[in-house]
Amino acid sequence: ETGVTQTPRHLVMGMTNKKSLKCEQHLGHNAMYWYKQSAKKPLELMFVYSLEERVENNSVPSRFSPECPNSSHLFLHLHTLQPEDSALYLCASSPQMGPYGYTFGSGTRLTVV
Amino acid sequence: AQKVTQAQTEISVVEKEDVTLDCVYETRDTTYYLFWYKQPPSGELVFLIRRNSFDEQNEISGRYSWNFQKSTSSFNFTITASQVVDSAVYFCALIFAGGTSYGKLTFGQGTILTVHP
Image (cartoon, rainbow over all chains, first blue to last red; front, side):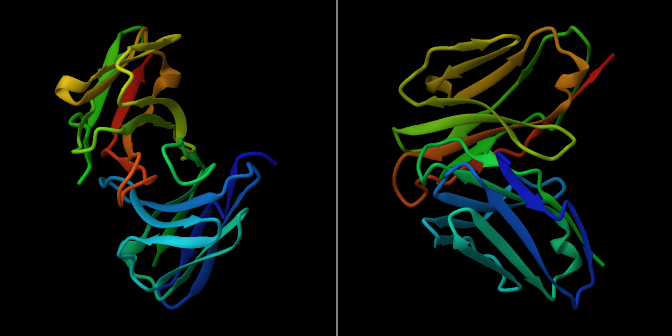
């Protein structure tokens, strides 16, 4: 598979649930990103990983917990979310951190009930 | 701080019309890169173009063209002879080449383009 793959595509979870979003890239990229896209708001950068090391945590609440076990995989662990966390969560990768275009996945549409 | 503004929230045109999407950015840096992405209903952001701050040449790719004007901090995108398949959300974005925002893509709010048959 090529590009950036995100699973699941859709997720509905209760506020007390724990779930994880998965992102996988086979592009040989060394930087990976999580973005949140809410209705009527710009895309918000949540986390940045470079060579499996977290280099940015953009004031994201602790109920979102990222994990990057290797340069091809990125996870976003979710627990005790709020309804306002419902959004499209997009994963992206780039060759390395720098002025490069990102390659995006199709996102996970999350609904918190 | 860097900021990207796309003042047009939604644009609606009829097929074959030309349409220009505006993008204005703010930066104090001299070296930066500008991007346009397309987001179709499937959700994935598709890369369209990257320009660096030292290259003000306009670019044309098929029906797409980009007008970069450093003097007005604008990087506008024109679709000529629009088609229904151009319907999507279009994002302008900015990356610094250095500093604390190095390598982090900052997006505008996006413009929803609807092309009617």
